[in-house]
Length: 102
Image (cartoon, rainbow, N blue to C red; front, side, top):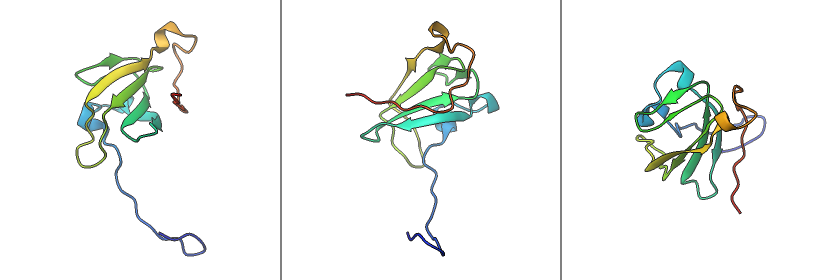
């Protein structure tokens, strides 16, 4: 709420991966980009993942579409936006992403 020598403010949980089935250490969020309308989250994870709806690998980018921040960080649709298995980053963790649609 204020910056400077005596900075003050607050923090709040924005996204809880367990709300969409990310429950193991390899499913920890590694990188994130927030869509321009803040209704989409784009995630990379520390390892392979299985949300119960979607299965993916380390270098994939998971799109959490229709995201609503809060106590239930659910998304309406989960899709793999980028499939690392068909790219040259098939065994690398993606830790910084920027997703832009024009």
